[in-house]
Length: 59
View 1 (cartoon, helix red, strand yellow):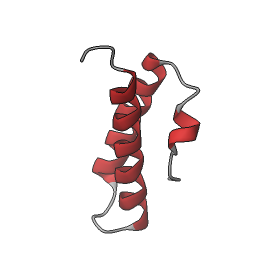
View 2 (tube, rainbow, N blue to C red):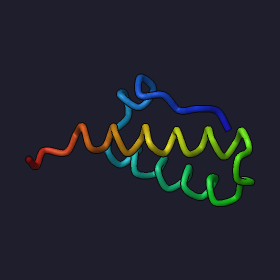
View 3 (tube, rainbow, N blue to C red):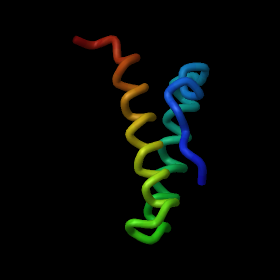
């Protein structure tokens, strides 16, 4: 697992972001707490959620 950055996410479509969110969530569930993989998955998940929020057209 490597960290997924906001700059990498910027070029993805909404459906791709949602698919990646699902994939990263599943990866997070399989990793040991406090491991590097867990921290990277959690940070990636937060980045994806932030990117999705930034594209939300509602106020």
